[in-house]
Length: 135
Image 1 (cartoon, helix red, strand yellow):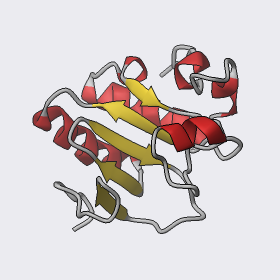
Image 2: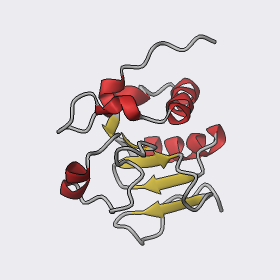
Image 3: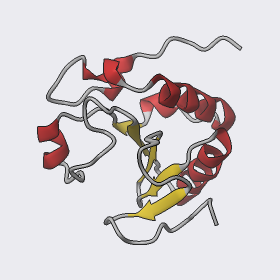
Image 4: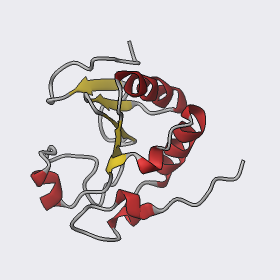
């Protein structure tokens, strides 16, 4: 199956044009699988990809965020309904994501192997995920 080219600008930190080019290629491949399996326009639903340190601070990201440049191993995907959110979480686990943050209106996915694996969490940080695909 040939994948269509991805416009990496969808991952740009708003204050740093071109920064989406740093995104982890394994993450992008997994997002392509997620899109194929769900039929959702994942790349149109990206809320946040790469983040400069200042943008990460502005949006309340943790200092060790996997979104931050140069790590670039995390995305937040808009989820308009609880059904879509829960479906994204379930299929994300099936395509191999091992770190999933579950917000009310978004799903965080990352491929940061330097952090705990097979974990799901809620927001604000420290609250349990409303849906946890690993239990």
